Image (tube, rainbow, N blue to C red; front, side):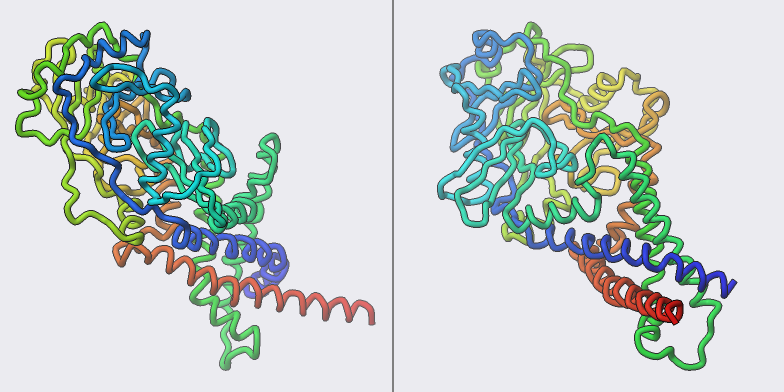
Length: 496
C-alpha cells in the first residue's frame, strides 16, 4: 500500500498539482471580489407613504390605456412620488401612470431605473450608458436570477455600474473595473466559461477528470501520511509539504468532492424555471375603486405599497403593504453587505381586500401564499408536506433570489421539490427540486464553508482565503517543484 500510494501520488502529481494551482488561485478571487467589490450606499428601497385619496381608479386607468392582460400591477415609489406600474410582458419595459390624473409616463421604465441607480449608489454625476438587459451573459450571469434589468453605467474612471430590476425596485448586481476583471478571471479559470456552449459536454468531462485526479491525489497523499513514518522531519521542501499535508488534505478532499458533485448535478439536471410571474390578472374582476374609500381603509395604517394580485380561483385582490420598521437599519457599506447576504426583511406585513367588492379578506398572507402555490403547481394543498415563512437566506433559498420574505412549500409528487412564493408581487420566486437539495447543502457547507457563519459574516470568506493561500504555497507550488525536480533527475539519468 505504501509503495502504491507513492507511485500513484507521483503519477498524479503534475496534473493534479496544475489543477490545484488553477482552482486555488481562481477560488481566491471570489472572496476578494465579494469583499472589495462595489456596494450599494442605501439598503432599503425607496418608500413614499401611499395616499390614494382623489386618485383616478386604478382599474379605470388600466382599461383606459388599452391594457387587457396585466401580469403585475403595483403602486411604486419613484423620485419622490408614487406611480402606478403595470407589467404586461415579463421581458418588455414596464408602463407607468400618474395616480392623480391616470395619464401615462411614456418610456418611463428607463428613467425609473436611472432614478433607482442614483438612489442606491448615491451617485450624482453623469451617466455614460443605460442598457436594457434581457438575457444572461458572462457580464450578467444566470446566478443573478432577475430579468429583465437595466445596466446603468456611470461616467467614472472605474466604470461603476449597477443592475436595476424595476419590477420590485431591487438591485440585481453591481460592478466596476476591479470587480468585472475579477469576475471574468474567476469565470475563465474556475468554471471555464470560455468553452463554447456547443461543447459544454467536453468542458464537463475535462473538469470532471481533473477533479477526480485532484481527489485521488489527496487520497494517496493521506495514505502516505499514514503509512510512511519518519523519525525526523524530511529535509527542505519535502518536509514543509508533508507538514502542510496534515492540515490541508481534508480541504483538498472536500473541495474536489463537492466541486465534482456540483459539476455533475448542474450538468445532469434541467434548470427549473425559477422566477415566474403569475397568470394574467382578470381586470374584469377588478372593479372596486379603492381611492373612494382610501381614508377609511388606510386609517391607522402606514401603507407603503399597493398591488393587485391574482388569487388561485382567478379573482383579484388588493394587497396593501405596511411599511417595515427601518429604525436601526444598516447604513455603512459593511452593514449593508451583511444585511444583503444574510437577508434582512425590507417589507412589513400586508392587508388584503377583495378587488371586486372591497371587502376585507380575513385570511392572511399564509392563505394567499398557499393559494398561489396551488395555482403555480396545479396541485391541491393536501399534497403540501410543509409550509413555512422564510425570513432569512440559507442553503435552500440563498441571497441570489434577492427577495424576502417568501413562503416555502415542500411538495410531494409530481413536483418532488420545494417552491418559494412571494405574495408581494404574486410571483414564483424559486424552485428547488428534491434531487438537487443534497448538492446545494454540500456546496454551501463544503465548498463555500457557510457552516462558519456562526463565527461572523466574513468568517467563510476569511477561512477560504487562508486555505487557498496555504494550498497554493505549500501544496501546489511546493508539490509541483518537487515533481519537476524528480522529473529532471530522471531525465538526466536517462541521458547518462
